[in-house]
Image (cartoon, rainbow, N blue to C red):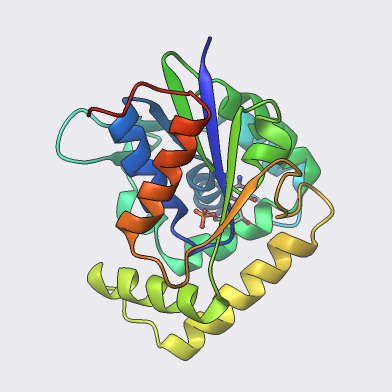
Length: 228
Ligand code: C5P
């Protein structure tokens, strides 16, 4: 039996950080589903696939050659053998991702690729529709939120640390319009699953969020983590 824990929510709510820490702590696999949509956006630009053509995008989604390499220092993401780890995290790539992610056909093409990440002993699945669509039977679903302002500030800090200089105001606008597109689309909009536990991280430290999440994992009896 593979245990899947889903962590959904808008960008900048802390999903990535918490999901990676949790996967590490539990010895589970990690699915960064946003990276798949980002990779598709990049692949589409590279192959001059029209971003307005869902049928061509979904063919690309089913066939794109991608790899998540954890063998040496840190995680490297490869597209057709090329390291795109840095390009993948840019705000421009995020906007491309959110455009291609709005098509139902594209989402269907990526569904099975995402489900294949569920391998023993377990998976932490990070995204927007992990609890609602991709892993609807997951025994623990968490929905992380934070105010738009706090999320934009976090993204700003993260980008600055990576050497990408974007103004906070411009970023707030990008975060706001990406949220709006993700929440208002017809295909798998960003909404908490009915059985998700919502956690507002605006005023919490990473450690406080981790402690809360670990407590939920323990309460659900999902892993023997307590003495680690
Ligand atoms: O999580 P991340 O910021 O990498 O996601 C980039 C974009 O990919 C999101 O804004 C969203 O449009 C899309 N996405 C999605 N469903 C997911 C994960 C990401 O639609 N499960």
